[in-house]
Amino acid sequence: MANSGLNGVTAGSSGVSTVGKAGVGLTYRGYSITDLAAESTFEEVAYLLIYGKLPSHAQLDAYKNKLAGLRSLPYQLKTLLEHMPQSAHPMDVLRTGTSLLGTIEAEGEDGRTAASVGDRLTASFGSMLAYWYRFHSRNERIETDSDEDTVAGHFLNLMSGMASDPLKRDALDKTLILYAEHEFNASTFSARVITSTLADTYSAVTGAIGALRGPLHGGANEAAMELVSSFDSPQDAEKSVMHMLKARRLIMGFGHRVYKNGDPRSPIVKDLARQLSDAANNTSFYDISDRIEAVMFREKGMFPNLDFYAATAYHLCGIPTAMFTPVFVIARTSGWIAHVLEQRGDNALIRPLSEYTGPGPRDYVAIDDRG
Ligand code: CMC
Image (cartoon, rainbow, N blue to C red):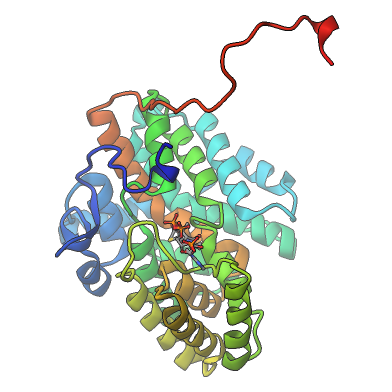
């Protein structure tokens, strides 16, 4: 029987990140995620991933200016966003927006490279989301520029129409760092498979967004919010989670294919969720989450992954639940681009074999003789 879900299979080599490596943990290009989250900004990390090294002051300033100059949306894209239904999932909005942008600003034309496409998408995803959201929820056609100089601030500003709150902006910025890269996860691997066919970067990102959307991957942060917000109290949460476990149901935001003894990103995002809860004077979701964490450890020996406390943190940042996974896209685009570049640098078509389990050779049955 072939390995289920390629579990434990090394499917290639990469110099972008290490995930759960003994004695090292999660690193981006050799830098520990704990150091990056404590000391760095998302723009520095995106630069590190896409361009291969941490930027100097001058490089960072230039990069932030560059991203700020890439926030506008062409009129064709605005028209498309207006025609997409309000009921659409914003992941589908991003998937479709990426695909359209790839026809208007094609890679290879006007000097566009995988890196510059990555910068364009990283800078404009927040604009796409907010333009679609504000048009449908408030009947407004917004300008997609803002005075904010970070990706996190720009997104919060456009979504609310107000200057971003520093605590929320910094918390979002840190989660973008945590979400930016994670080795051969499903969406990144999808991007690499698409890239291996020599397809363009927009195709790789479009496919990666599709893979990220599912609740076993990026969609888990939305599912975790639905879970946490369905309980009235920690006691209620404990009782219900016990029932769910008995019924062998998944508790979203727990478990991981690689980390079996804890996700190093989780304590960082948990701390952010606590800070935001204290600032809001509302620890309800945090307390419920904390109890679920305790029950999952006691009953299953399982730890929360990044998505679990990200749900509470994003909720307290004022981000609508359906936008949680799209925010993950904004962050992960830099990781996807790093892998597109790496795949192209030493490409081989990714085309594995399957173990055949169908019927053996048999005689063809003419249509008149079929039952
Ligand atoms: N709740 C309850 N039981 C679980 C959970 C969970 N969240 N996750 C795994 N298990 C159980 C599972 O039922 C199985 O039990 P048994 O051996 O009795 O059948 C055992 O743990 C092993 O699970 P698995 O599905 O074989 O493990 P996997 O490595 O294939 O799956 C996973 C990893 C992330 C898909 C899975 O843990 C899961 O579905 N978690 C919930 C969704 C989630 O939080 N996804 C986010 C992943 S991390 C960030 C990201 O990628 O976005």
